[in-house]
Length: 298
View 1 (cartoon, helix red, strand yellow):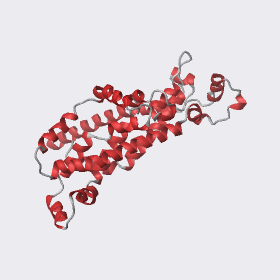
View 2: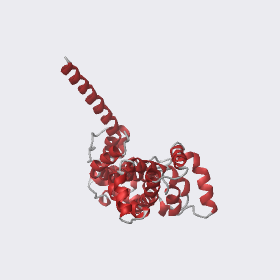
View 3: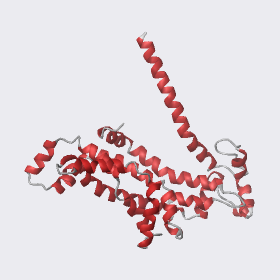
View 4: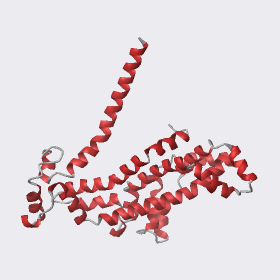
């Protein structure tokens, strides 16, 4: 009886997980499908997953004012080629990589020593400072956006890489995550390093950092995904320099006015933007799960 009940519970759990997975995957399915369809197929929701493909060239030729002889691209990748023609996607992708990696590297340089001090050093006010870190986690980005923008404008940093990077170089979530991991590191390891004559800074970079690689990779995924997909803040501080657009801002290039939006190239661009994140997560999935588990988070 208990075995049957356990099997039923497992079946229900798996069913719920499958339904949840389908809900999550559905937007990606639509995005990938639309990236390979013609405008008429997108508007009428016809053509199956890949679209009919045959009318793709003629339809786009009319829409773009080209002759059929000028439209020689393979239909299934037509939206992708148009995406690169309509906007400098390589530049936007470079901006995204540069900004997200710069933010993460500086966050790591700050979070590791701060987390070490909050977890392994004893000093007056440590618990108060950690309470402030926890309180800072509750402050939404939108609440501080205006003061941040005013400060950046006063020092002339609007429409620069610094405006995209500097406000996010201190991550209270990173400090909290690394602090939770460092608490699992035995104190004996640190005491042994001190007996060998290592300074506290040396212990952070030569002892704690190698042990914290799984947690650091987990934090890297959180940080990179958040800032790679961020549309709100770049839209606020990048107002007149198209060369500084990040990938999400690049999607605005395909938004039409009276003539409608270029949904096919827009979905192709979205596919290009999201692919690096999916690949990176799949490659680091094992370390990501390990890092979250070791920090005690659920």
